[in-house]
Length: 369
Image 1 (tube, rainbow, N blue to C red):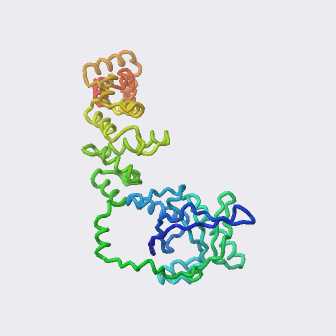
Image 2: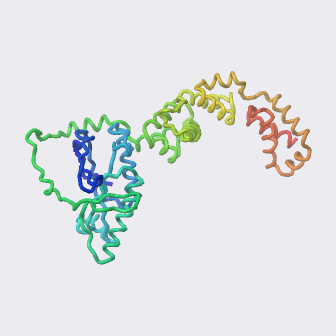
């Protein structure tokens, strides 16, 4: 997706014509607010591509700290130019950059959600197709999208540049942008999403999916990096994505509002890595830390959750289960896959605190003995 230009403006008052049939109003709430307009080339082929482009653009802007990208509050809005063309014509435009191969465009103004943008493109494209198939011609104009009626309606005929009657402001001198200044800015840019994703895959051994989830926004990537520092990256990613994100989603909280700090989540991972607790108990420890803010190591100590690694104690538990279930023993010796039942019963008998690896080894030894 090519960007044609970016320019800075100040938001002006906007006219409102649909509040009263006899009057027009002027909304000056955003007057003077700085804004950046990004104009893209006609490279987008459909609603899904448009949403993907805007999502990626918003991600980059958030990483740069340019804006928060909140569309509902108006921090980011989109005007969409929609046109249709016959099969093969778009490819001719790509080869020649001749706009005559493209259809007449209509601009849909001021949409404030990805869903509305996709819906507006869809219904406007269908409207234009119906006009052309009916023998008519699409008129260049500005339209508004009505999400309740799922239709676009005419707002005004589309102006060309000369209709705006642009003229130079003598108080605003021309700006000369030197390449050295541009190069300096480029050299001081923060790490952008795609570069960070590639680094996460390379440095932490993450899958493409996990790296994409963790770099979706800057706060999530920062949380993960702090959690993974000096630890197994894949394990850290698993805990951040599955446990933390899942719990935050349930409570409708953002990562910035997480009750569990990266240090606390890292503490849970450290306890697993040192065999102090099992993965099952770790989830209980995480839940307590999430709801109380307590330190994971202190939770394990106080609640008596430390993993049982004493092979003698585990062996005694396995012996008791084997002695109480002779029929199950016979079945397991015929079908080794049933050994998992004894592992589960042993974990249950020890309150989930037995070392799973030790349990598996002892059960296998006893059943094969």
